[in-house]
Image (cartoon, rainbow over all chains, first blue to last red; front, side, top):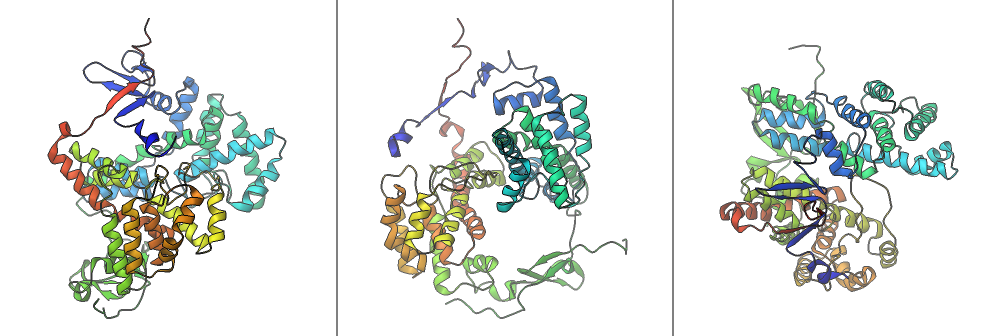
Length: 268
Length: 268
């Protein structure tokens, strides 16, 4: 069935297994009454249950918490945080500034794209290894077409977050999963080719997430608010400072590299 | 101020500002790609001249300006059934901020079904195939590359309507009008070969496909076309959001729900 017949079956009604609210009565969340069954859940536990429909162990949930905590940097210079801070500086609202900052976090050289590509690479690579492929061959094949995400960093190749996340994983006995081991092997091979290609935080998070059982899309959705906790401080400080006092630029701070001055010819 | 501090500058080929003599933060004269915006362009240039000039190094020819302006009229309001406008109205009806209504329209209108990403992808098709029918046939018959990115997979060819039965009259009217006004290589070729392409994908051309083609004729890159398409569809979203705000939520559909796993229904 396609065309209008396909669409007509969906007109006017939401058929769902995800949930619904019944105002004045109750709310259902993935087949459970939110208030009677799930009200004691930790927020991240509920969040990942909403994404996956699966339950995770207390140790896994602590690791997921750690992933977010260790990358919450209230530094208004960082591009996504700067959006939140600029919103505060011009007296926009927290929701607008923070939601835009989160949307901006879905970037290519950090954030969204690197998470998705890193976990996808590790999951696919492990599948190939299970079918007899060698890590070195997988890497050679991959870098023919594209860069391998999860290794290397735009500002500094040493990722200060990784030892802390690895330490937490060790404490929780979650550091020996197959994707984490594979990521370590990949790092050794890449470092032998380029000393800047250390495993970055996206790579390590992706490896742990794959070991926990996240798919690439589940991880993408889980990790989207990862930077959030660092953003409100940026917004608040800029909002408390005088209007427009965040990163003001003089006209001379813009380096013009374009066409010379010329006369406008009026359109006919 | 720390004299050792590194001078941070924004580089641009688009915009030059000269300050008032008494304040380096206040603009006295602004040049867009060399043209004095407030001294010469204002009152003599059209909005589409400025838009085109911002994206390209030269102002549009009269024919290019007319093409862009006509396309802007065609795209200005996707209508209240369109998901991007629907999203904006969800903001409007609840009294959300103006920006959040537009953010909603942008986020939903960014996708691969009638959205900005669809235009980007079809422009990539154009730059890969040009006006070579064999290349088009081959590309349309080939599944898209399966590289995981932040964008979810889409199961229809960009630029065509997956739920369409025949080409919508508004689509043929737009294509006819644009080709009459502007003798662009790609628009003309599309009009001549539309039936063949539609048969190849077994789906009718969509308005997004015409927008992508017009952007190619205007010499825009896929990145530029995606941005411009997002912008040009916002006016309708804004107007409909405000209209629903004035109507109020009681006049706005809430739809019925069929919960397929309601725990209350599963009780013995």
